[in-house]
View 1 (cartoon, rainbow, N blue to C red):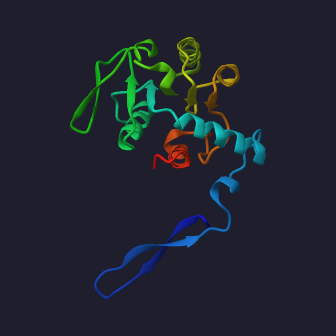
View 2 (cartoon, rainbow, N blue to C red):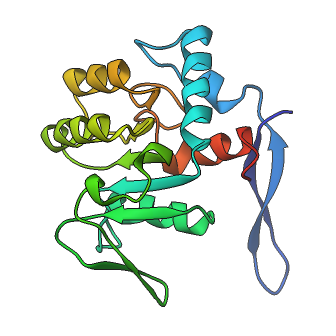
View 3 (tube, one colour):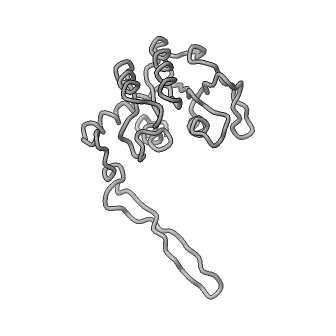
Length: 196
């Protein structure tokens, strides 16, 4: 199926000018047009698509670094899971709850408080040193899959994740300009496992 893009069209009438947009096919799907210097091969993209599917096969999710601040990605990623009807637990040691709409959703302070860690995939939105500590805790708990948002890792952290989990999504790739991101690539993962 061809990718579509919005093309603005300007129409004017004697009363008021306005702009509408029409959908037109693009010549190349966005994920193929986007170049990734260290991870541009089709094989690497397919391998990461496989890890994306594995990540979203989990029945439960947790977001480490979930934030109460609506402007932060920790909030946006957590709300993405909520808005997609997924069973998600926010992890934030500094807050008792995160408000989404009219609802206050209780947080936990660490992954060790998860009821079923071996059935939970974890998205991480923390600085690299905190991410590494979180990954070590996740490994001890038997968490099967992790999703490292852009900015949460360095080479050491990314390698640790890839070496120690059934699926580790992160690094260059995906449809986003900064690498794999739940907000950009998540729906594709949900579709791949029949959850969307």
